[in-house]
Image 1 (cartoon, rainbow, N blue to C red):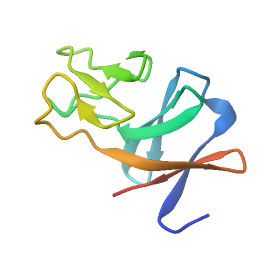
Image 2 (tube, rainbow, N blue to C red; image 1 turned 120 degrees about the horizontal axis):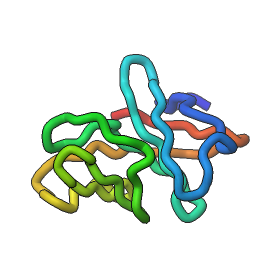
Image 3 (cartoon, helix red, strand yellow; image 1 turned 90 degrees about the vertical axis):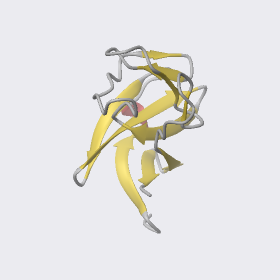
Image 4 (spheres, rainbow, N blue to C red; image 1 turned 180 degrees about the vertical axis):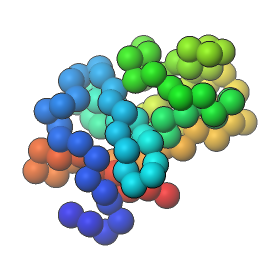
Length: 103
């Protein structure tokens, strides 16, 4: 698969309700598995560009440990301050692999 998608991970390495940090080129992203679907976002909080901990997910949100900002990784919306941009990327699964299209 190509068409702008990059191989990010294998499906088996991300359990249900878990997130994983991966590097694609020079870009760090987080991949989430939530309710059987895969999502991907920036690995940094839009508030002060702090690295997000993949172990700090609750439901469909990831919470920044530094200041408590909450981001919905299924929509890419910062719940604490919707005016902030939290990059979310198109994510596909093919043949047991997770693919991400970076914008």
